[in-house]
Image (cartoon, rainbow over all chains, first blue to last red; front, side):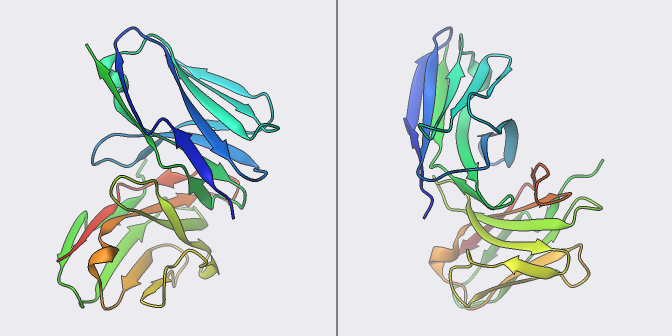
Length: 110
Length: 113
């Protein structure tokens, strides 16, 4: 059974600081996704990572994938309040039937 | 263009009642998925349709849950004899093919009292 674990579950950080969210998964995967979810809203796709060593960046967020370690990271650079949300990683090993991590609730304080 | 549409956005029902949740996918998307997100958790896969057929229903928690997609477009998730533990946000997603990016709807928040 595929298991996906994120840490930390909750992260409170100051604006301007850097931090990393970790996503570990237990079996080989085709693809790994990062999603953002604002309270009461649906899931917004941020990144899809397809191969070992893949790195993608959008604004202050950068995601990477190490398939050998079964680890993905989401790095936040110089956080701003607008990044406050819950972030999920999700592993796809069967055609869009995703297994999600438990989420990391990020609060960025002024 | 229009995204994945789910109705109703909120549903409150009493324990033991029957509910139907509707999903209207993006036009032309052959693959449709239902997920369930309990409070404070990540979404969990329920069922996947390819066209009209349920290709994988391994995520349905028990036989009170059933879903259909009779014409290969709109799908309905049906829950019989609802229980308080069924309270969650039910998310629908669609994709052009199984390997195309998923597009999620805004979900239906089901509350069983």
